[in-house]
Length: 472
Image (cartoon, rainbow, N blue to C red; front, side, top):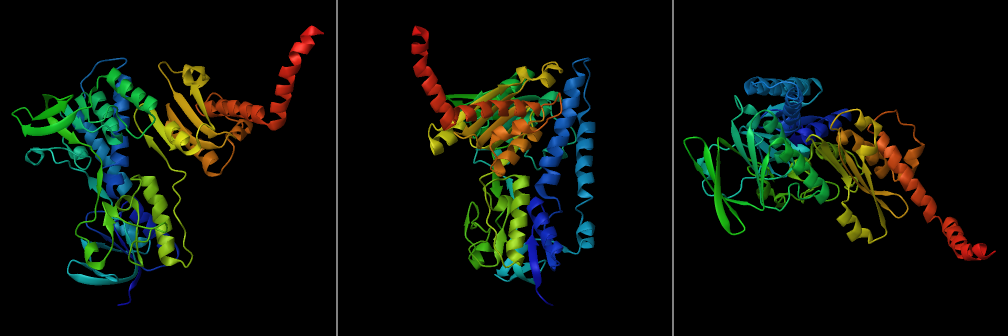
């Protein structure tokens, strides 16, 4: 049997994108998956979490008008149904109809040109590793003795617990903590750092936490989990903060402390593929072994579905085409789907100052000035825009309704290298949230004008001549 043009190991966001890219060029592709297509995004990440968030938001809105009991089992059933609907576009039958061959099983490299699956050998000209990641499990004494939750099984519950302790203050924690609290779960978040969302703008992270606290989510910051044990009612977590030990109890424990790349069992060490937490790749997404590429969570550095999609295209094209393309992470953006949403593109203010010194501009826009926000009671928002001294976007941070959509417009300006002031020329529908960006661009335009050498000279000259004019 002739070797495949490309063998893709894993069929999540990165693997499916890579496979379809190669199929589009008429290549012979084999997809190997040990579970089922779709990966984390379809089954335990983007899709079910957003479905749960939307269900919780509907309940939160309805409770403004009436108090009622929530059937969480029905909500979870609907959440899983959303994943199943998405899956209908990713089934093995769909992949095979598109031209790929699909094989279920655990792949292991036997040489740099061949893998073994279910006891059978398959050869390929090129390979792409897209095996994703799994929840990172901390070495907390007793954790392996309790029935804890992660994002991989939290959506498989029959019903939600009455109380929940969440370990970690990252994106997954914030999204699920708010959603579950809105569905009637008493939620306590434990975070070692002094603030949640540690990699984000501190002022925005604080606002997200305060919003969740106002809704009833409890936080213990600067707190370390030092042990966990099973109780009749659920679990007891032992903690330490400021050299003081404590404990708290809940029905269930959710571990959300990050991700770990899926590199075990692939035989990578046997063929010399370098790993360091994940698979080590170069700017072309090629591993240390020629002809073997990696993309998505298994390669990093950004464990995001849209980054997996971006990498999957580049990895596939580099694997099957003679011209190499390099990855560029200068224009990375993401969103946290709390309510309100929090979205980011580019640098924080601290990162921008470290890279560019004080030759940056920082703008703030409060949605209290936005007509669209005034039409909805309780609607708030904040934008922080960081530009170069000439008005080019270095970073943007938006906490607002549909922030994930708003950041896309900033991302276009940033990626295309456009001066943000140019946005004021674009007619925006009224009243919309996006009009906030147009208004902000007008501030950038004014500063651009004031920074022009001729304007500076004119203002300087005018200032010097003012006393003489007064004498006259």
